[in-house]
Amino acid sequence: MTRPLVSPPFPKADLRKLLQEWGARAWRITSSFSIRTKIMGIVVSLTMLLGVFVTWQVRTQMKATLTSELQNRGYSVTGDLALRSVDPILLDDAYALYQLLIDTKQNHPDVAYVFVLDLNNEVIAHTFEGDGFPTQLLTLVNSGGFEDENGGIRHLRFQSNEGIIHDFAAPILQGEIGVVHLGMSENRLHRVIDTMTTRIIATTAGVALMGILAAIILTWILTRPVLELIKTTQAIGEGDLSARTSHMTNDEIGRLALAFNHMVEDLETSQQALKEKEAARTRLLEKLITVQEEERKRIARDLHDGIGQALISLMVNMKVASHIKNADERQVRNNELRLAVADILEQVRLISRELRPSVLDDLGLEAALRVFIEEFMLLYPHINVDLHCELVDRPSSIVETTLYRIIQEAMHNAARHSGGDTISVILSQRRDRILAIIEDNGQGFDVDSARRSGHSMGLHAMYERAELVGGSLSIESSDEGVSIYVEAPAR
Image (cartoon, rainbow, N blue to C red; front, side):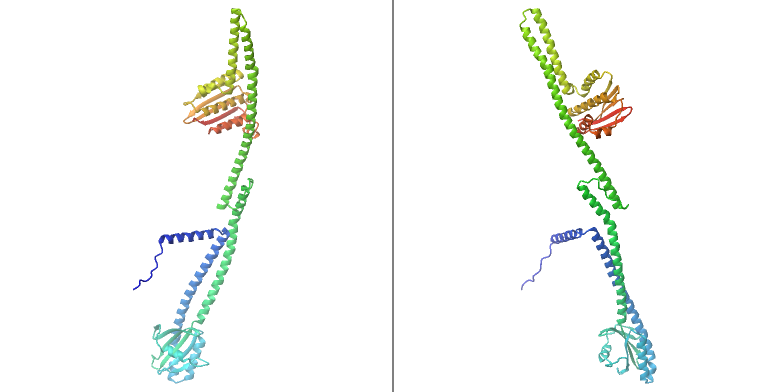
């Protein structure tokens, strides 16, 4: 005996994967449509679904209601007809019975036929015309199979070539003299339902059309600012930071447009500041190269004119001293040579301090500033400099150099341009941050204009130095003087 072939069950993992692929494919297809198409599709789909549901619900309810009403009328008319048929049958008045059946059919448009059977199941009277009474109908109504019975009146529902017929059979005089059959058609009922359905469909189509128009207007309202936002974004992507999107509404999209414009304004400001900074940095670099070359020329000139000439003079004097025979004169000459060597050494130390003070590396920032302030006050005797230093730990070498150069530049700027007679330098430490404040009592200046002009290389260099070590620099200027605040990490 062969075993029946049984297909293996579909693995759950494969089913899950298949569903995921279908979902991803459906999402790709849906996401490829525009917002306008999606909104219109949703509106039309909901309208059509609602129309189909309402149509089906109304048809079902109307059919049930009208069918029930048809059956109730059938019971009522058949019962009344059975009562009114007693006299014509008992009087054997065939014409009166026939006229009663014809009147009943004419007065009730749903009645398809009426006929009366005697006790021998013979047709006494009927309303059929043309080919006469259909014998198949007699066989059908006598076959039994009634659906229900109400007050002795039996109900049979069957399909004919003219549609669905409800046959009602009522006994005449409790069945002692015959039975009356009344057939009611559902044709008019279906025509009423079809007419109502057509109206509902027309109404649904009208509502769908109105929904489409509303969707078009809605999508235009929604997508117009979005499309303009996209257009503005493309313009900005091409480098036009002056582009702005219109603020049309105060809803979420309007707030998005407003926030986008603020973002672009900030971006434009930042880019402008970056351009100014790059331009100032370029000028600073050019200035630094120029200053570097000038410094090299000055050092070369000092070495040639100062130390070089002094060394040549020393060599000549040493040669002369070597030919002096008198011990006293030779001693005097040697003393002069020692003084000349000491002067040359002092010149070398001065050049070294100008390049970079060794005390900054050896003793730290505070000591280097005190030495610089002493030399500064000798250079500018009319200016009084006050130094307050409260550093807990010695900063890193690069931070010390940065703060030293910033304070040095700030003091020279105050001496050259402020016209004041007092400079205050304060150094303090807060945890891992160092704060330096340089103040003078001279005339202030417009800080923003000075930075934008690009002519103050020293001012820009101060900002650059502070930023390079992860610090910050700010300047407050007024008619009472200038305050420079520098903050830098200790390490």
